[in-house]
Length: 383
Image (cartoon, rainbow, N blue to C red; front, top):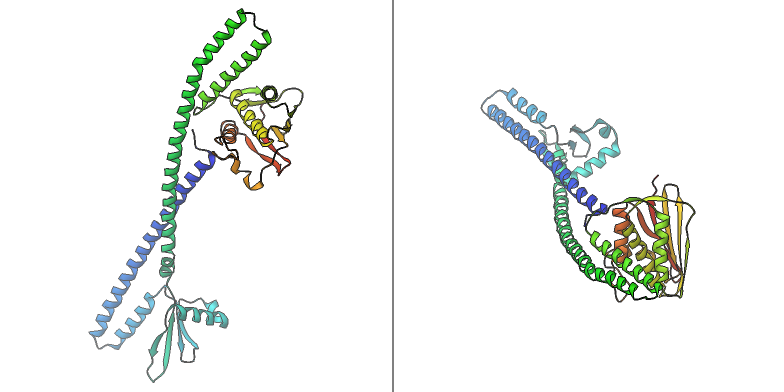
């Protein structure tokens, strides 16, 4: 069995997202390293200048030290106020903010919330306060743990996805193997039935009985062919879908409850699509049988085939119990069934046959509780 398109997209999306986010993290770590390395060198230069100032009586050395300290601060935003909270100086603050009294006060409050202001004693007994905010490096580091958590979640999801799909692949291989073995086992008694049919012909049995027996043998051969194709890529051929639909529908109508009113409406002429006849007939059979079960063997069932621009559309409408809207997608999942007996694989197989093998679409077009359901198959037309 193969992964469906949604599974493949999810797998590659998770891988791509994990790789991109990891690359961004590595790039940011590299930037942080360069900035921290430069910051350490600046501090060492300030330390060297302070040692020079302490070992000289030249007052100009102290001024030079102060200027160097100020010049090295290129990232940390600082606002200096007096004891009346009036701004007297600033570093790394945009002029537009300083000219706007409201914005400047909001920035002061934000800085005070981030870091406690530093008190500065000025000669003469005056006081000033230094408000400062976080540097860009600190602001980026704040989000670093969140990004790491996202990466961890992505990798956990990736591991889980691969584990789940590998288990599903193993199960699919088991089912495919069982189906092929079943087809092989059916083949032996089927050959015997063909031989017995030839013997019955020589015994002058009613020809009508033999015709029906041959139809059922042909049906068993079809079922054997279906099972043998599970797990393999089917061969599609340019086929008249009108003829194939009629044959599949009429076969089922003759072998179903007489309490069901079967009706088929197909256009005149020919409509060609790329089709695997056996698998397509299986899909029609699954939808028709699903409709019969929904009606509990009594009601009306109509199949309509029509051309719609680039598609051939098949509508199968019943008068059964209906499907809740919330289950329109769920019913196509493997194992979903409302019957006491059954595997819940019919609609799942139909979806795989139509959408994965034939590049078409199958869906619940309309449904009302206790009134009925309409399924739709859409297949692309070919010239």
